[in-house]
Length: 233
Ligand SMILES: [Zn+2]
Image (cartoon, rainbow, N blue to C red):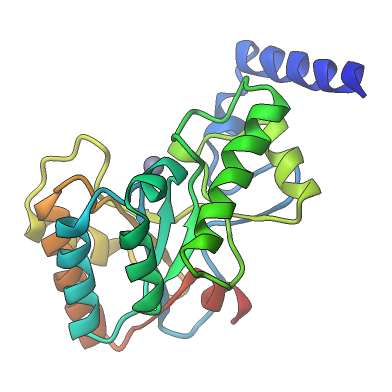
């Protein structure tokens, strides 16, 4: 068993060195397990997903009010270390009817890590998601979308679905206005889209864009569901 693990790690290192970048960063291809970046449907239905955090009550207030005003439920891919710091915020998200997903414990690039560390990053975060009161299926989103061999094999062995995205307008260092962010997001959205935003860490432009995106897509006849609802159709 140890030899197999060492072999897989070595193979992963060779893939990284040998130009496995496209596979590592692909939003649509993964060597094992189920990967979803969007859903094929003619119905005007989309999922809003918010990555990282939780980072505190003020950020949660801004998002939860916007979503509640519009009766929209979203999916939050949280970090375990954020939930550990703000367990009450995670519980508020659950109480408001939102879906929680797993975005690892401390947001590392999930490549070239020993299998034991991959397992810890995922399972410890799952545990806190359950403690926050979330009872639905927990899907997984890799930080920076990065996965190669060890992570997909672990996710497949533990029957987890990996969820990426097909619409992302705000990169980590984005300085766009709320209006530009909303316009770019809406322009790229189509039926079955999974939209990624980063509204934590006091990113007020992204927080403001959430309401604009919802209002614009509502006007176009779109409905918002959680990731699990989108996948289950
Ligand atoms: Zn992230």
